[in-house]
Image (cartoon, rainbow, N blue to C red):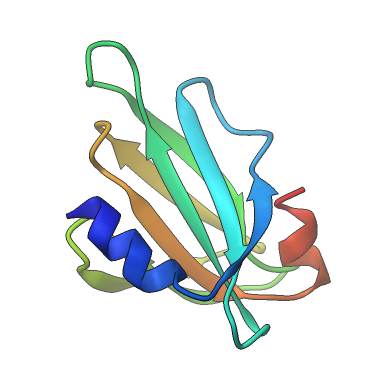
Length: 114
């Protein structure tokens, strides 16, 4: 289900690259959507026992800003999450718990993914 969800979300997107400052066992990739206004960040955790979990601060906007983003779980369920000071706290659990975070695409958001 996670692969189908990500395929639907990322169709016609362009990769911005891997997130490089994630906790051990946490992985992420950022994509710019075809509208060239929005980005999607896919985050997941993994370890040999398939029991990984991590809390991660994902920079989604400029420091000092607050707002909301859409979070989509591995089953395709969307919810809204608030961020403060430009960062969203993401709790990822289990290998299959893939998260997609849709965010505004600006210079600071893109820089956070390089």
